[in-house]
Length: 407
Image (cartoon, rainbow, N blue to C red):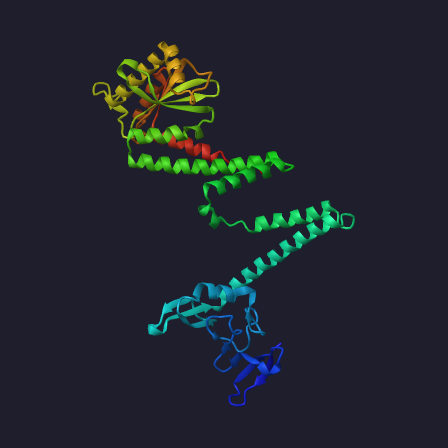
């Protein structure tokens, strides 16, 4: 332990001596100026790239960060050396009332100022890690001991203690800041671990349901936000088609497979945007038009509204697709299975296929008459459902609102 000695030249200064085995080789460890609230700290020789550290704002040794024997606690000195030892740092101060600062000071080199609270917090974190490492070494020792003296240290009890310690460490070390740095393989390992966790729990159905709810909530949230951006940007039909073929499953989970660009005109080589196949093998045909496609036009004689020419073209087109799909279903199924063997289920059926036409926006229906006539026109279509983009977006949001945790 160091010895305190009053300095006769200056009553405000005390010297703290560190004694080696030979008292004649005593070295000054601290000089404390109580009036100026400055503690000069001299770490053990060879331990720091500088011989002195100023600790300001204190009238006594701050034992939360340094020991009286001349060391920073929890290996903090090692990390100072590793990060600042080769930076031409000529001055280090740990200050109670200053902010962290590292800057060049003329030709002298760099000046490093560390806020005391930052240093104390960092040392506490390092101390926690050191403690956990010590616990882990203890667990290894107990396992080895159990193998040699199983009667006195039963393996079952030892492994239970070790397992609980590992579980606590895993949970304690979870840090969401690390997520963005996971490689694909590491993320997959984490997912595999999570699946095993759910599978081995006593109430695994409850945990599975909670996990599924959370995953669905995240997936739907991203889909909704992205789709809203696409609608507002009035992107091309191909961009909308690409997005929807990947994400329509979140609206209706009955779909199990998707087939892009199906040739339903054959001779004309016109391809429908995509088809979605449900679990029973039935395929629905999807055609995509832009969000600014006109839905209605007004009859000047009677004041009624009817399909706009843009909508008529889209409806006529998809009616032809439906006709060709059913009339040439055998050859179409055969072609699809031959061309897209890995995508097409064996039980694919084209019996009275249903078509979904996504186009337009309900903000065009800006009067009661328009809304009523649009409803009538939609209902009059056979096997064709017309869905405006904002309505499809609302369906997504409604699905998202269904996600809840039952209390």
